[in-house]
Image (cartoon, rainbow, N blue to C red; front, top):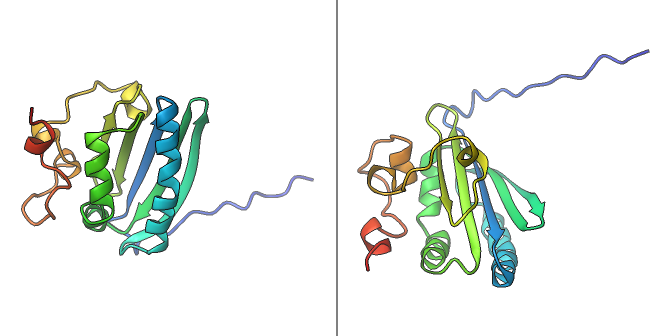
Length: 169
């Protein structure tokens, strides 16, 4: 006789501003494989430091051929995520990566519980929402996650790298 399924859900009332972010890095070359592997210990150390607002971190393998690894993180709110992303060590990782992607591509998609969705794709083939939605250059009002989400600006920490610095000739 079939057993009745044990169906459950979660009560998110304690997390009204919950944010889920998926991140991925894909090796584009042999050098990229080395870069991809080098991020594992850095990320583990960062998660082990228990940044304020990080509720859960999970590693994900998107594919083995080509190597495409990532993570899913649950944050208490966008401000906590942004504060962490714009502080060390992440800020340094981001600046270094944007100057030299080390043979990899990177993407993230951010899903706040109460609002817009935003994404960024850097040197990536189409993945995730980029497979069905038109791509736009991430400049001006589309440069930062905060702006892409349509959140108020002014009190946020300074960006890891400014648009002017990134695109200077």
